[in-house]
Image (cartoon, rainbow, N blue to C red; front, side, top):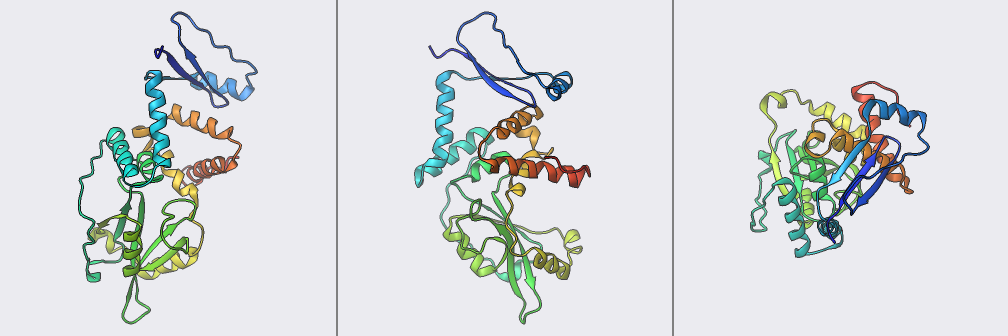
Length: 281
């Protein structure tokens, strides 16, 4: 009873599911094909995706995905660790909850702080971007004060990630000691990435602060969150272009327009920055 073939059929203008329980020939009829869809079909063909699981496996995977967002506590950590192990080959060793004190003198302008925690959307974010961390921040000293004060500059979002640290949200700066306390309370893991000397020589502290003050307080912008999933360096490891077009078609049918806006903004960012093309609607 659990044997079946499930297919997703998609073009740039539509998508549909079909499940076949019986062997033999099956026919799919496409109606009301638009002129744009004809162009797409002639150029790219019909995208067909086969689900390589039994019905019970597919239901179980959907349940596991649901668990990632509905479970809390130690059980949630176990679910996230299983997801990262099974789908990315990442294995995290258990360690003590210890803060290793880093002397501020060790931290230099331009050093990057990589942060990661289990729970919520971060494991999916790591999977979607091909990364090993869920959030980044940068160290930057303010030399207008005596003595110079070490800050961490970052952007956060109340509705996104990380949303479990104190406000304000958006583009902001936090004194180093306060930053460490906030993220430790929020159960983040820290990784310090030192900037290579040849690149540190290029960092202009004054211009960096001018850039920061230009954007201070601006909202995080989830288009920056979605954009890496469309990056050509990432897509081959997670998505194919055929899968991306199917996802875009799915988002276009959502009643909630937020996913549409996030995806459109992400694509427009690539159109404008890399290809110098006009914005798409």
